[in-house]
Length: 324
Image (cartoon, rainbow, N blue to C red):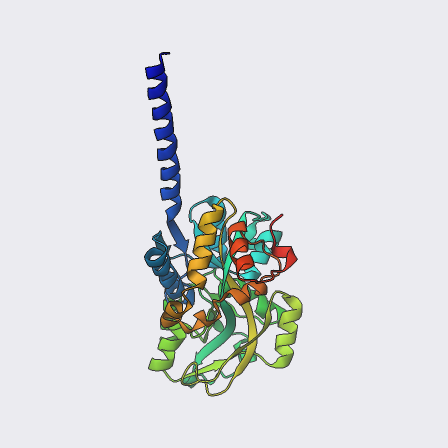
């Protein structure tokens, strides 16, 4: 091969390498973000996360409606979406392969990026039903949202823990709300960042009653499901809720695959956490989307790119969450 030809070959090889790297970077900058059903907080919150990353980080993020945390974990693992949202309860089930939805598989490819907010659990019934407490749901028909969502996963387990028999209905949050208004459901029990859009709509249109559990019931629930933590839904978050309601909750985190580049994970984490005012304008639950709440994760490995950001901010992460 002549010197001229060798030069052409080297130039072509260099161009191919550069183009390949650019294509890889472009592919990573176009990501689908798995959210949840319309009427839930994930759907609204995910929309603003996608907008912030598109506007501030010049990424192309497309939010996609899913059934919620369980499906987001599965789709991250399958490579069908690049970003997702999950509760720490579902993340624990995924890592252990312990819940029915995992079919025994351990989803060890997911990595935490940034904290989102707490997911308190709460129920609502029409005032005319006369239902004002959780124990009154025994023998009733209850909507709990999509089957693969947080509420759809946990409320059947909660009913079992309290030795209650109910008829469970699954569906989109908006459908659950409409079925409650039509008298097809006795209650709509859900878990999402408060205020829940579907609950807010019911609060504005109907005479309703919001309720959670007694201290004894909460203790029994937490004994059966250790991933739950104590939570409070403050009075006034819905106009017809006039007192604070003690409940149980699960923290939420954004997740990605371990295969995401460190630079991409760092950029996503930094951009979201440093644009909290914009997040808050979209949903009140985003008040908890701050770097300090990364410590609410005590078991799910963080992505190395996210770890880099928390180190820069002086956040001391739980040692169990530092990737090996």
